[in-house]
Length: 170
Image (tube, rainbow, N blue to C red):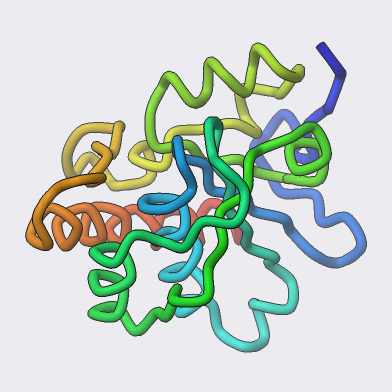
């Protein structure tokens, strides 16, 4: 395992490197949840803060270059996001090393990342932990589900993102 130390200090305070904070959302295939989170987060960030927070996504078992699922594209449109141009990518050591905070959808993704690189528990979290107690910390995969399933997933993600923003700017 490579040591890819956190850029969040012991008090969970963000330490900005090069005046930017790098946020990485991770799911399994990088065609549903993580691009949905990336797209919605980019909409939520103001133009001023967007220059200081760089948002990306990847998948633990992604095939590079796939489009986002149509249900995901449609669901995030309801939140003002457009992920129609998204292309999937697999997580790798450089993405992990470059991230100040990695947010995963499920515990199994956190285990995968920890088996690949040393990451501080403070720098690797479940996105659902930021939902303010509004449900389970894991966000279920909508892949193959109806549009209602994708919509519900987008709503779950959206409920967590304000907490993420508050955490970053604390």
